[in-house]
Length: 419
Ligand code: ADE
Picture 1 (cartoon, rainbow, N blue to C red):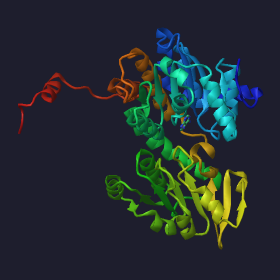
Picture 2 (cartoon, protein in one colour; picture 1 turned 60 degrees about the horizontal axis):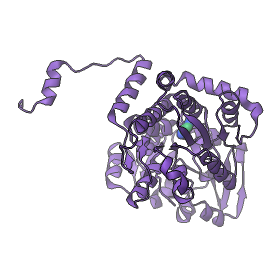
Picture 3 (cartoon, rainbow, N blue to C red; picture 1 turned 120 degrees about the horizontal axis):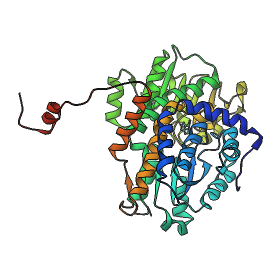
Picture 4 (cartoon, rainbow, N blue to C red; picture 1 turned 120 degrees about the vertical axis):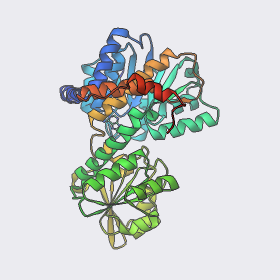
């Protein structure tokens, strides 16, 4: 099998990790059972570029059960779990191109290897496969039925492609499904980001000032969880509506230039570039911790911090934490400004990826069903998928809900009844 993994001997550990995650992914397991019977992806070649984690392993197992001939490459060099990659290759027969910590050249070589599979469906977390097809592999465009996109940043990139008229096939913005962003972005990012910061620094958050840049779904989740730990949370925003929401949610809101002086912890989750710059770092307190949980490593201007620093010490505490001495102070950057939740921890827990990846699987099935009928634009998955995933998840949690009475249905569909 064509593959590129770090160490095949790690497969037994990977299997244990995948099985542990699977215990908390009952929704995806039910989709997998359904897929094994109906085989909706039969005869289709699929290339996926995702974080190579135990949760992703259970997704690709599901897609394979659905009949897809699938290969996987990494969407970030720091998030790859080498034992999981080994298990996928050795125990589940799925080719993987991913090694933890691979350099930029290796990262793009792995994307090339995934595209050499000549996919009919692609699945991205950040739009790297679609970008490579548009810019370098035009020969693949006509055979692609559609592409799934997992994350906000990827959707923003894809909408820019749609605006420029360069999308060669339909894209399904899985991120925009309610069963994805309301849970994964909010509760997943909230918990896993704090997990990464705490694992790396070992610090107590209670009583500390925690600055969250960006109040989208990820920022909302992170701010709520930091407050839950007893931190005093400050939000920075550029969108007046989101800033107002943050203020009414009870957070302090101010520009980064002011927050920079006050924060003990800083975490960017904006999806935009150069949020923390040299002028902010100069104002920070001694000991400030700086992290990013947005998709790309562009939110912290690391080049500027390196330029400011008179001394640099890597791997403080043995963690992915670098100390930069700036004047008389030190600031500490986690995971080199890459996703802290995947660089310093293990990403979102399986029970929330359960919903994201059940939605991914059902969106893939829908995309194939709609073959030839979707325009070459960005599509939100149909509401039916949200309802199915939420219903299965609730059932797995033992939660029952009410249903509309005939009288209530009639009331909702009529306009005559007023006060
Ligand atoms: N994105 C965030 N957390 C993740 C995880 N555990 N697996 C795959 N993708 C993720």
